[in-house]
Length: 114
Image: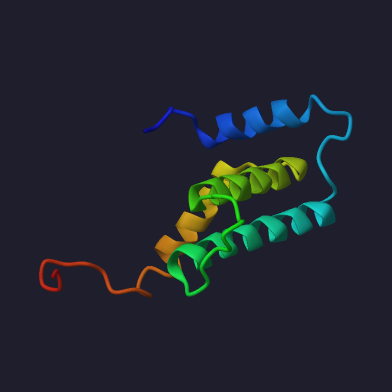
């Protein structure tokens, strides 16, 4: 279910949240550490759900969706702290995929659909 927010809206919402605190955004190095921490938590959840490592009985219920949300929040904070427009960053990457990598993968065609 979409709430109609653009990435700009989301970046502004995160900025409004962070701006209410004196500490503001963390430094780029601290942000990278946070990003790594959140990625590790996502990896743990994916491993529990799809891998061979079941959760301990005393571990709380967390979800991949929650961990992806945490990771997205930190990415947005990182981008905001460096004045990076994530819509522009996304457009750059999509353009790269559509030009440099346009023939890298096998496209679905009526002949190879199954």
